[in-house]
Length: 160
Image (cartoon, rainbow, N blue to C red; front, side, top):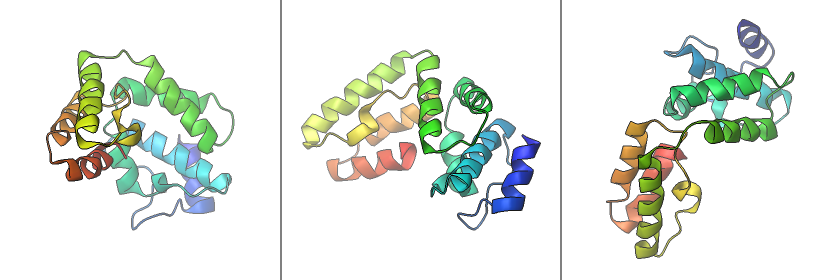
């Protein structure tokens, strides 16, 4: 991880927002995801919001701990930069590797029902949320209680 931090900071600055990803956040495992994705996007010439510390920490800190560990292990096994394609492969592996909980099915069903009532599919937001910690999924269920015109914005704030 230290090599990633040094390479990222020295070569790219991992710029993206007012405060860039360089490690030192509250959770080293979350930092590792953010640094790997930021560094990889820079090496691959891809734009990525994960170089913005606040954006990345907000997103990744909502993942279940075991999912963060699985994604990091996947990144470590790549042997190269984490470009967009590799990020999505490791993200999918994290989703597939954690056990679904009853709340995940509850959210998916409630989202689909609410989408029908609002005449909107809510895009990918109704997919499984097993990657996310339980409190985030609870917040997602609360989003579904909002007026139709506010649901998509609320879901995007949590999962987008």
